[in-house]
Image (cartoon, rainbow, N blue to C red; front, side, top):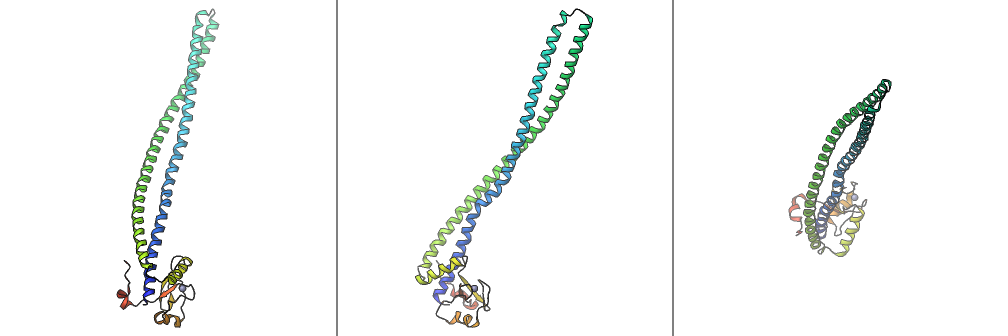
Length: 246
Ligand SMILES: [Zn+2]
């Protein structure tokens, strides 16, 4: 293989790794967002339950106030007992007290029922709090993990870029700028193997004449369909042909 083509093949290898690792870096925020979803849902559910709890608590306080008012009323009625002159009046007063006490008993039942409801709701709230706590911890652990991963990838990228610089220094400027042009236009894949008269970049057939010329020509040939640089692998000489990249 021509030396310059070997360099391009090596450059493409490095660039493919750089591209893959850069894409990996960009995935981190997505992963974080995926974990944030369940946490937000749990927090919203907690808020709804909390509002329910507060509404019941408010109703209970109102009921308790009503009970107190009923007690006051009963006390007032009882204090009037001594002023009563007739049995009829006495009976009427007793009846009134009885009615209020009956109502009061209904209120107390309602309060008991609400207390049970509050117990259930607060158990649910504690559970939701636990869930939120867990999800927060999971998110924190993920953040730590992603930060570590990013550190590793950034270091690898820095090393790759150094290698790349050393390599591009050996490539003639004209060829390099052509490479970059194709690289940008073909989604990061500028140098591809030609195998069995097919370009492994676009998978279109290469004219037999061009296929032969890939080996014989002094020029670096490009695929007539997609414009990518073509090389042909020689399995026997593969080891020897790999250029030094470090
Ligand atoms: Zn092609």
